[in-house]
Length: 266
Length: 266
Image 1 (cartoon, rainbow over the protein chains, first blue to last red):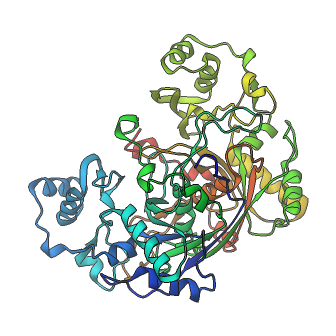
Image 2: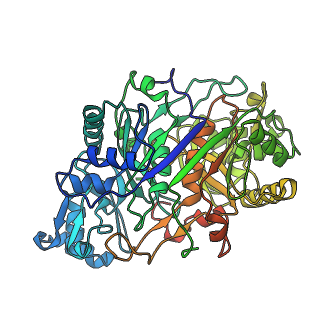
Image 3: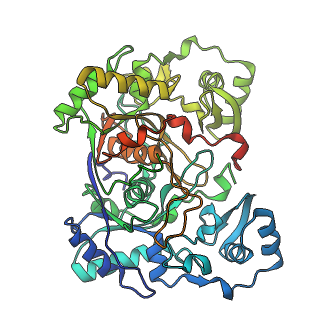
């Protein structure tokens, strides 16, 4: 991976629109191939397909009716501390390993997947019709596996070897605003290690690891939009070297998770 | 800004290469216009020009010979705790308001500009020849002002109204690898507030603020590369609506800084 990574000097990003509301069990590969064709961009070998977490979650049946959720005592306590719905808090706790911080309307957790994020990614926006009041959507159970499955389905359906990133908009420490992050990835090195490579003065780089999949997720999510745009995926073209890079090792977006022991801010 | 922001469905990113080593006092506007012309992409109205912090710092004369730096007692203590050069640590302390965390080879600070980052951005990579051993490079004193100046110079030289982002690769809490962040910005809303906008189900978005300038910096820096590529800028095309968005308010990349009082991780 170190040997073959070349930073991409020219990139194009095309958001894909016109998808129908995604039901549980939907074949995302087919929907996304159709959308890419409609958009005139298509999908090619070595493209990176960034897919919004929400449609992956919907396809995987991760919508939960709030009426079926009975909050625990702890959830009710946290609900009154945060001003959140106790049933939502219950879902957040079920999706989490540990609670890191509690603020107004926000509970920052380390979730079951190892992600550090607000409210374990449990969300009510962009659900159809009135479901935003009565349901919540959970993150995919294993987003790296979701990315692998979608990548395999695209290969099977269309014979295309592309990379897949499952992206979500996450808040950050120290900074305002959300940016897209890779919560799942397949077919590309999510984290690229350049340590030991020469810099411009011939000096060896000492610390540089590039969060490739997060950088691609950031622009993918920007192109998709956050509100009512209805563009839940984006095709990024220009990383033709990634297929080669992949052969030397791949660990999914989990590679981007900083272990608790080396995290100064947890 | 809220009224006019439209997420960009198609974007192209072109990294600019072939710049000479940048001396103090260099006219970056001229160098970047020449590079954009050479690359065949040019620079147009409403483009976003992402510029590496390093060439801005070099043009602003922010190289410091280490031989002239006398470490304080505190710098020497922190140097032995971190394994870093005491003169570098002295520069880090001079560039900082407060030290947040100390790890191996890293001091995470809130710097004079309000940025939270490792080693106050003081860096020795990509300096020319052997200067990487004997000098360090500091961040621009006021990157938002640097961005404004460059934007004004591009307008004056070429009559082009573009946005400018000064970008640096920064580490993050919770995640491995660096991504590009906007430390300075002019000509675009660095932070876009979508609160109150309708989602797909007609439900009002409650929390969404988009870190637009950070998302653009992330892909710009990815295209530039981190090592010896010698591509210290990138042109992002496809955000034609930003000129309109700008008219309703602009505060530079400082708008992306989360105030200490509302930061759960400081």
